[in-house]
Amino acid sequence: MTHWLIAPVVLPAMLAPFIVLAARYHIGIQRVFSIAGVVTLIAIAAGLAWGTADGTVMLYLLGDWAAPFGIVLVGDRLSTMMVLLTAVLALFVLVYAIASGWDDRGRHFHALFQFQLMGIMGAFLTGDLFNLFVFFEVLLIASYGLMIHAGGDARLRAGVQYVLFNLIGSTLFLFALGAIYAETGTLNMADLANRVALIGPEGTVGIRVAAVLLLLVFAIKAAVVPLHFWLPSSYAEAPAPVAALFAIMTKVGAYAIIRVYTMIFPPELEATAGLHVQWLLPAALISLAIGMIGVLAAKRLDRLAAFSVIGSMGMVMISISLFSPAGIAAALYYIVHSTLAGAALFLISDLVRIGRGNLNLTPQAPVAGAALTAGLFFVGAIAMAGLPPLSGFLGKLLVLDAAYGTDLMVWIWVIVLGSSLISILGFARAGSILFWKAQSVAPPEDAPVRMPPSTMSYVAVGGLISLLAAHTIFAGQVHGYTTVIAAQLFAPEPYITTVLETQGKLSKPAEDH
Image (cartoon, rainbow, N blue to C red; front, top):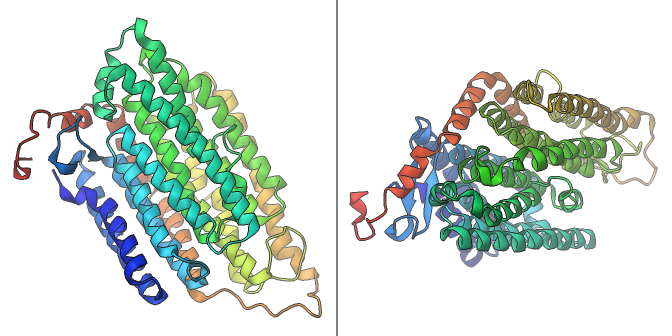
């Protein structure tokens, strides 16, 4: 048992109340501790990822209670990769929030930010479904506070809509957990994998209902059509650093689908046969199409970025719904890409707002700091649209390759390629309005003089763009690693054995593990 596994959850959980109680009125101290905490989190996450890179499955038993009776945290290649991605994203988002002054426009930004990290890290590391629900609720509470940070009627309305949709998801989650527990008597994922596999054909109705409910819950979190309505307004109205952090939030839903439907309800399981292709794949294809049509039709830059997130999640879910090693490997590569690209777009939108005063996609006077902002937008648009040479293009190639030879290959290829063309047109339209047509518009005589964004704001966005470039340069190594992750997911016996071999050791001292 490694105690480092609980550190990504405990560190932000302890730092948040410390910031509230000891540094409530000192924004400088809050910033120092928040940055230090995230940097420490990156170091811990990198260590965990390194420790699981050889296939080792790490286990932490809270209170030294053995599974399935106690709470367990489990670290394998997939969960530690997602923890590291979250920590790295959090650093650049936090730097931007401090550089732009967003963190000082309302109360408790840094405390809520740390609680948000706690919920995300816990969701990736938990080994049972009930605690996945608990961490989802931590996410909901902290994200609502962050969403309405700095106030405003539009932000409050979007926050209420966000909470209502997620409360529906939480209610469905509880129904699903109740159905699963009634059928199996456990909620531990490893134990569930064994017990669900033993259910005969005569007892599949209850477990299939539970599997469908869980899929609906995770689809809400992942903003899959038709459960995506909460995302455009919520992300567009949220403060830019918050929306950038939320780029990883939809990936929590994708992670949960990958984890649950490869371990507990695998494609070959008779009780849930056909659920993946018949339900998830059509919804994913429609999500991709609607997302990119929204990019083309958007009248504001922040809504364009929000719809691009929906489209990117459609691409991720197409690959996941294939439920093959190649499909999961491609999805994981694209998850890293879309998280970084989506976060960069939201921050670039804020750079435009600072230099322009608004985000309306109408010809106006040139943006302050237009050259650098336009360059960043150009790279971010290329990445999200999936044009060469960046990782979005490589990710789409991997998804198309994974779909080759499947029954719905033609539909997948047509929609992926068609939506790519639509997204190119949408981003080109937005870029031309913001940076090209602006050169022919004279500013009003009484227009206020706008200063360009701070240097550190550009550094934060440039850091995300640099990570996208690295994701492209080392695409072979990254895809090789995601291929190994997919192989581990489709052979979950070591995971299950590591978790359940602690049965009967409830009274053993910690040093025996």
